[in-house]
Image (cartoon, rainbow over all chains, first blue to last red; front, side, top):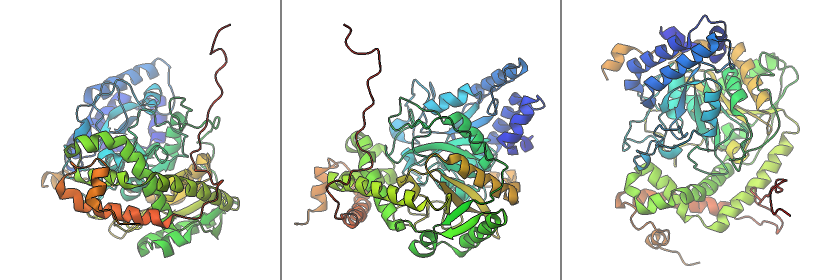
Length: 469
Length: 67
């Protein structure tokens, strides 16, 4: 029944609503697939077999009684293991929190449950969403389903690998410097970092208060829109929560791009940090698709990529160290080496440099707003390369890619699959909008996906190959 | 400005117990952050506010001292 595991939310919810697909049958298909394949992928660190089946049975009973709650009712999801789940361990993939069981759900988890979603389990992450591919933690790192020797990217690595390989229909990720979009890119799926403040971070382990974003990771932009219909809600318990009023994230789906003005930030990927030719070629082809759909292209300039990297480091550093000061000074041995170093370095940034980084950030936000008066969205690649070997990319010294500017700016940014290499590895493109114009970003991503064949390809997971490893 | 030895900085940060085997990697990362900080020490105007200025919300009606 693994074909059920490759339905999109849009397809599955239609069938669930008309009662030609049972949420229990769907949940069981995912649990079976996880049992068969996750031993080689490590997408999950905890699978909630009984709880998931109970939620699926409840969804089935409610729908049979005519109480359909909406498109997420009966949909099986993975939750990154930094989102609190009431009564279920939430570890941040760290020995430090191995036995941490929160009493309450994160706001977003509560919203998903209220919408009838079925939570299959907690997905692997880089330690505290920052560490990197680590082999010194209580759980193994997730692997890339397109080639298990490759990196699924992070930090929402299990969520990305799980969605791509049909081990969950969608998942929650978080993004402080690219941690939704990067694994979306290297797993060939869609991932939305919403506008800062649009989705609550209450009950999500913080990494950097002013850069953290929570958001959906799905097979398609359309599914991201369906998730956002539930996830976007003002939360008075999140100090960063915005209240922009109702937004219909599905409003642009299926629409055309006639007259859309697209700004291409070429200096990022041609001059500041040149992307691989295969990535640039895929982007140029995507731009051609947009033009054919009636969009108008224009090259635009933002600050150099290095400046955004500097600000990310100088803001994330002190904020993350303040969160982990007690742990790193008291029990540093409970952290993996990568997280220990990356978080520990934040202790060395002066207060003045932190505040100056925030002052420069305000200027860059104003600069981007000025640029975006002349264009409706920006486009860049997401990652500079196709997926690389597991554990080889060095987060500190590795070549730069293009996600961090939009954490600094807080703008909505969607990564979609822009094609494949000759050996079937996914390539990526990022679509960025003005504040709270997430629906437009999703519309553009949806239009691209529907105009291209890339949503027809899934990674092949062969049981015999897995057993041999 | 006199250069401060990394070990002194480690002590000042309360990280004396930081594992020896990771200290070289930490020092390298700190050096890259020092360079980042140097690059953004610009000539800010007095009035340049940071992006996360302090904000308050009005007190909700019906709360506060009863008369």
